[in-house]
Amino acid sequence: MTITYKDSEGIAGMRLAGRLAAELLDYLTPFVKPGVTTNELDRLAEEHTAKVLGAISAPLNYAPGGHHPYPKSICTSINHQVCHGIPNDKPLKKGDIVNIDVTVIKDGWHGDSSRMYMVGEVSVAARRLCHLTYEAMWRGIMQVKDGAYLGDIGHAIQTFAEGHGLSVVREFCGHGIGRHFHEEPQVLHYGKPGTLDQLKAGMTITIEPMLNAGRKEIKELGDGWTIVTKDHSLSAQWEHTVLVTPTGYEVLTQSANSPAVPAFVTAAA
Ligand code: MF3
Ligand code: CO
Ligand code: CO
Image (tube, rainbow, N blue to C red):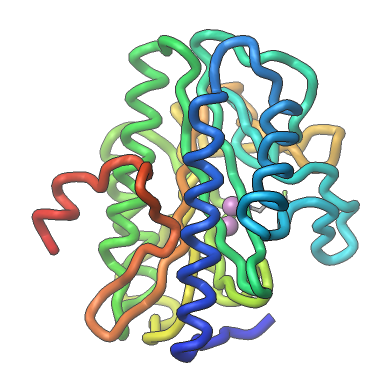
């Protein structure tokens, strides 16, 4: 899949898909409580996507490069699960942290976003990991503008994460996005400034760092999808879909009830 550049019509399509992804996460928020199963969240997401948003869930039956089809409409990754957790019938419990990752297709355009949810009261360490990962994502987003390098994004995220004693997962990355779920380029969450491809206005990419409280190594479970930390340490992830503009960036996956943009971002704007 090559890099695609969105014209004004493509940008309008991506803005709508992005907003709907954010609105789906808003819709799910009050349901994320002790006792709810991730299958119930999946069912609610599928129903809301189809009936209210008039959109399609991209993950359902997604089968990149001959991989066996993903069986659900959302990904729910709990505690030491890094990403691609498959919803099931086990209830969430107080103290869990869960990433919900949604991707909607609206008029052929994809909007991809994920957030961390804290189930009831969680440990200080879990809360810290969620907050620092959110900040890391924004440190990456702030690098985005026409002419910046992909390595600038990775470097900003890696130095922030490692500076706080967290590790960066290497095997999964952000990506170009548009009429296809996963397009070029790959957006690494580690790297060196001034390296790799340059961003150009009209590109739409995701930034979606996965940070571990322990070591960076991961493994895949026998279900062929779920990724967990090898040392079973906690992992967190946040994701936005972002448009590259001539002067900076526009975050497309925002909505009325998105978590607040960090103060250091608004102060820089
Ligand atoms: N939403 C994930 C991403 O951010 C991809 C999930 S693929 C799936 O790229 F098949 F697991 F849904
Ligand atoms: Co993504
Ligand atoms: Co995603």
